[in-house]
Image (cartoon, rainbow, N blue to C red; front, side, top):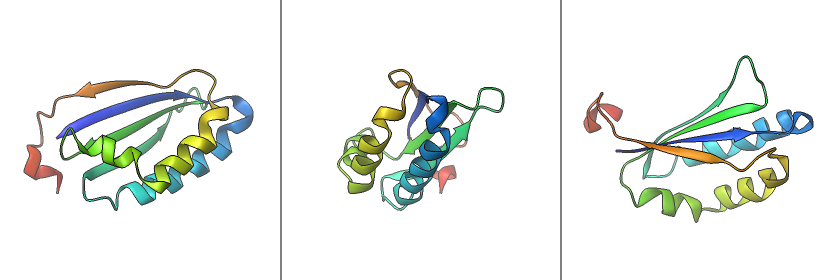
Length: 102
């Protein structure tokens, strides 16, 4: 598994629009064969802070994801909503093992 956490800070006036665009993207993303999980999380104390938890089957799958129409739509929609550039961290899977994600 290839696990990515994407950290996003959204301008206050765009929080609801960002949530709507991100949920649409996530619902389409989980249908991709290379994605096992795609969570959209909002910080309970700082509502403009979001984390996307993306679990891919291989290291090649994020590139395929970025080529999809739903990702391209999401990216172009939310670019102006961000208060700062996105950042990410890559994680190694320990538990459950790779078969446990299905």
